[in-house]
Length: 207
Image (cartoon, rainbow, N blue to C red; front, side, top):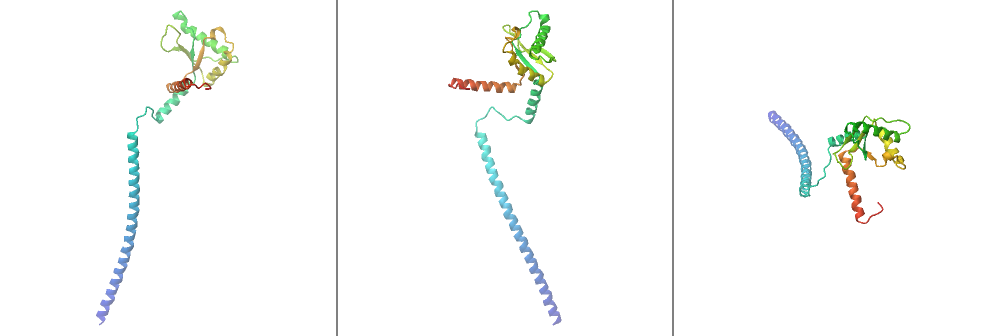
């Protein structure tokens, strides 16, 4: 009888342990089920985004090609650096060249000195260099490029020259100038003038 009771107690313990194991497995099953549902939602979200991305790519492929492109960081950095280098330069039109080939350089340097003295009365701006640029044209002199010491010097010339044009000396009557610009800047200015010209052709006058 005692042996039977021992067996019954042991079986009870086994059943209790089994029941505990079943409960533990049930909890684990619920956790796995929740994880599966969560992953299912993630998968659904990924599928939705993949479909949207596919539509976007299809739209891009179907859209007509454009000539404009977004500049890269390297291109932007190069443009900024080039503009900084050109900011100390001036380009002058209408400076006559010397008929004596051997005197042309000294003639241009003398003109630049007089040009700057006429513009800047309180102090002299000695250019680092001055030289002709552009293709040779026998009907008009080539452009004269002046390299000054700083952007401040260029700004002084830019602000003073219009005042001088009110009553210019004879040797400056046919002269005009501009800042030195990059190809990108020149293209932007050209496009602006083209747009203004098109607006004038359509009848706009107050522009």
